Amino acid sequence: MNTAVVGMIVGMALGFAGYFGGFGAFLLVAALGAVGFVAGRFLEGDLELGDFFRPRDERRR
Image (cartoon, rainbow, N blue to C red; front, side, top):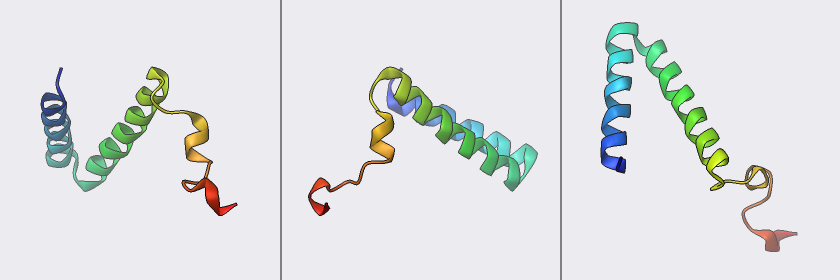
């Protein structure tokens, strides 16, 4: 599935959550989607746990 289709599905899910559940449900779905995205990238091996704790610029030390 390409990124355009995934983006469309995510947008539709957020739209339904916002319409039927209000703004709070919209924020909850968006936050859980972001957590799921990061977890998926971590499980695929695209992210490492050290990426969140290591400074971007290693030269600052």
